[in-house]
Length: 447
Ligand SMILES: C[S@@+](CC[C@H](N)C(=O)[O-])C[C@H]1O[C@@H](n2cnc3c(N)ncnc32)[C@H](O)[C@@H]1O
Image (cartoon, rainbow, N blue to C red):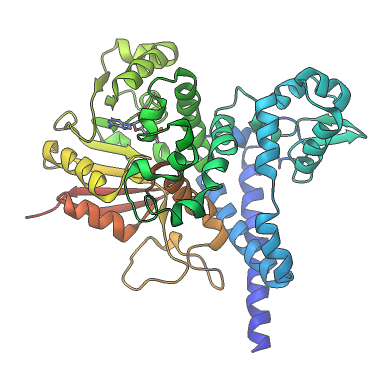
């Protein structure tokens, strides 16, 4: 028995070793070597949209490392580590005080005295925050009380899109998460699946908050701006742009980006595949912002008539008819089953015989091997890892909780997506695995 356990640990060590080497090889392919822990600039690979091979290696590395560490470390240590973690609060301070922006102007380092003055905070408390984060490579103390940015802390600059979504989490989602148990025991909230019974609403109900997330932002220009820049950042965080490189867009003529936002997906798509006719559809205030964003960053695509912007309410209206691909990124998980089915059914009504629906978001797989759930071989971890890669699937499972906190909904399993697809008259035909997210392809179900 103990031999078998040791064999499993050795196998995990081998996975750690081989996956780390795969990741190193991906960096070296760029011709710029591997990044250094305390580098204060991005590595060229940090800025490339298609990092699928790197992400596959990191999924194995993080999953196997966590499994090995939690097997070998004392359980008291491991479990307390789960909660003894205030990185989110330290990051909240950094972002709201714009500490990374100030340090960016001092590449050789800035004393915490001057830094704290510049951001109007107490010196010793600022040092506490930065030291806690320096421990995990986010900032570096180059000499006593002198700090610089690192490749990680650059994400926390106010100009960084991934920083926008990071800030939404540190500032707001931390508050929603703080009332999770209360919502699970409150008579009004505990068993409700209404979107306005989300922990978000509970956390702010004394301030009179009601309605869904989108209604909350409707009259708040600044929040909408941060959110929509955050969606560009979210795509970088999740590696979702892999869909631009690993889906046969060259064989497609027309795409509708359903609830497109300002075009986090459709704008790079238009730039990479100028032959595509693209329709962006979203709420009126978002379509206005989308047009401004496209005018600024991709005016030639609009001017040559390939791109259109059509206001719609995805719960009430059908989208434009007869297009090749109806693409929904980060949409279905925002809605309970009844609304999600309605959205797909509205699309189904206007699909042509060869139209496809692509649902692109996090998909959950269980920690045990489910009989009958077929998936691509690359989506199953090697033994003795948990079949769903364990901590390598961290993002998908946290995203599931994020959906609960904000919308009272969830990320779905493949079977759950199949079921709502079937209820709308669609059948699953293909799965595209992009590691943190998947694009699940549906066509019209045969009668
Ligand atoms: C999570 S964002 C995803 C945006 C984009 N697909 C992406 O991945 O970057 C959800 C989008 O749904 C839109 N939305 C919410 N309610 C809607 C409705 N009733 N009708 C149309 N769009 C809606 C929001 O305005 C927002 O742009």
